[in-house]
Length: 470
Image (tube, rainbow, N blue to C red):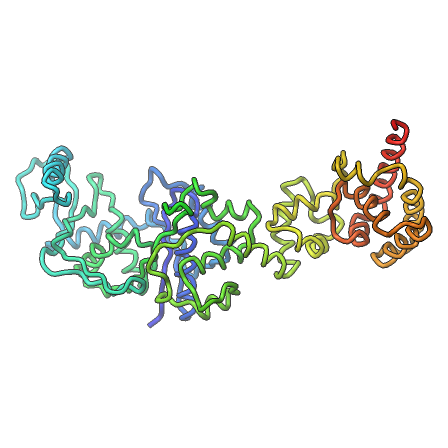
């Protein structure tokens, strides 16, 4: 049997972090077993669905690298098929027209709740009812009234639901549009889905869907219901907890592999291992290893993972993702210095790509003012002569390399009988505007000769004006 899994988001917003985890688990299961991963867009809610949301889902999955083998399939393209299945169920006596008005249903519901009963359809039209030809109706599935649905859940174990607890659900609205529980069943049937891995908020739908599949004579897929993700306050993860959109994490400067690594460990484990490559995820992932209880989202751990990948990933890979953040700061990442070099010297100094971009601006753009504290401490009249000598020495260098720059700084310090740091730190403030940077020789090399000399001239003018003003 070829394993076939699917991810079936509703395009009514962004790709939620919980949806991304579900997609990841389904993708990993298919990849581990040499199966097929299908993307299906459940867009029958035409009032809330949008092209923008579809694009956000596709963009998020592409950024995460969750490639699909088939799709995307759109439910709005399949209405003819859904209507044919509904007609089939009616013809077989497994579905029927219900003419109950909204007012009647609300009255029935109120009475049931008053008696502390579970609100449900009372089967009024199940065995036929008199009606006017023009009277609106919905189509209901004739759910079995005896027996039980047994779900051998891949995550939760055996779940048993009595059919007596299930009412006759609506499978087509008064305007003829099919409902979720009908469309998802037909899609899973037609697309030969063998394993359905989804959030446990769908668990109450599963027995209804199984009964419809049985009515259609279909082979049942295996189900795995993944517990939800909670915020640190114990409530379901939402916007109030911070970013929940996958694309927002990209904009906040996270690497896709850091988010994937975090998501795979959010409710699943393989021993005590914390860091997983994609290949290791595929190798070790097992649905039965998913926790039965909800997981708590920990932003600090995600940040820790992101910092790990910034330090360990290939510099060219990081530069690829950093470029968009440089562009957002008005910097063309195709100009000098080469972005890969910047990554190499800054990767230990940042937790996110946004932070890396912000601390690297001085490599590409001139600054208009110094960090006040750094300038007050380091750009003093006492350093003017050594700094001028260093400026002249740098201008005369034939080889603009860290080794020659370092040697010159050392020689100038010795010549003026000061420690190397006494000249190196003023140089750092002069060329970067602040007191923190990678090693000064590499920093100067990457900034470039012309820009370094111009910034030293500006710093020397600043020192002289400071001396004039006392």
